[in-house]
Image (cartoon, rainbow, N blue to C red):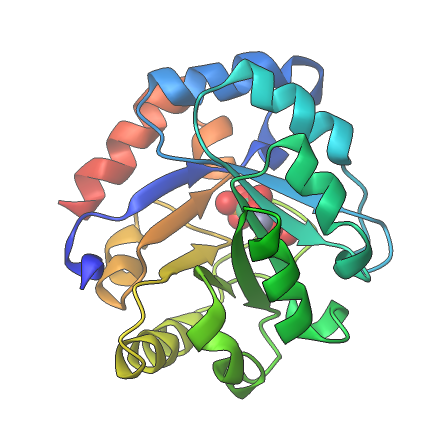
Length: 223
Ligand code: DX5
Ligand code: ZN
């Protein structure tokens, strides 16, 4: 399946300068990023606050790259229509925050948006496996969501492998995305475990050489 190809790279603007986000997404686009990862946080599901649908709509005007919107919010089912209208290409919800994941995933698809399901590091992978037949993307959180710049939790590799096997058993072509603590030092191991999309925030936006140097380092590590 597609996991033999080099994984897509999705810079997370959580680590960019919020006063210059259009510049940040354009720099990532010029550097050859595949997607832009947009971390929406509500201060309830996670102890941090970022931005809402208007930011997604404004970013949509600033880039041609797909916007990969990660909803770290309670009751995402009440909000997916607004993020779809704002121009999200992918909408990913947390299994812990979604009362009826099957219904919410179906609602996202009905809005013409690709649907993703994710889980916190302490949530058993069995919480998402019943839904893998109806997702376009499964996201493994390799840090506790809420903040950029945390260390990759090593046990995540086994969880990535487990989801890789579960997707393959279902002959699913869904993307397998990994988010949190991705650096040139671990990118290859994460890809070898079966990931098809790597999110990187601090590795991209805190590199002194900027996104182009950072993405080059990640690509080199993946070769
Ligand atoms: C964490 C977010 C991540 C974050 C990753 O809650 O979901 O997308 O931006 O940042 P790094 O790559 O710095 O761990
Ligand atoms: Zn994220």
